[in-house]
Length: 175
Image 1 (spheres, helix red, strand yellow):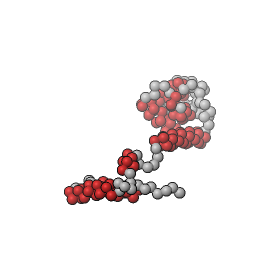
Image 2 (cartoon, rainbow, N blue to C red):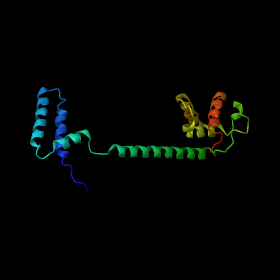
Image 3 (cartoon, one colour):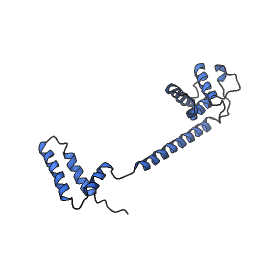
Image 4 (cartoon, one colour):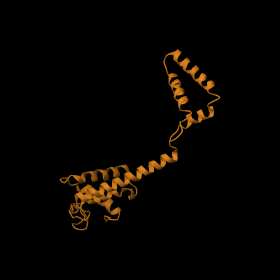
């Protein structure tokens, strides 16, 4: 068990006085200012004013290094959870090798391209590898991936062309 913070009670009283400084009543503002001065003078022998100033500048809690470690861990966990969700969705929809191709309508032949749904999910999963990705393209990738859950949706030939060109830029093979 950790020792009680010696500044906790003092900080609580000081915070109350500081809040009163914003009052719209002049008497309360004056009383708060005088209360702060009295508290500082009365506790100058028992409480180090430099410690109070340090406490105001850097409140107790996590330092930046700890916060950054937590941010990184959250980002890693989010990425892992997203990848797991994509894998689960692919398993539910069918494997990445399942052939339900609509790429013939986009002019890519009939047997050399996987189904557009698999391509959309793969491109979304690997979009960080696409060079020169702008906001419009990223929005398109996310939109196409979101449409894969609708079994009745079929993209236009222009959408298929754009999706397949992104797929080919990533190597043209689902891994």
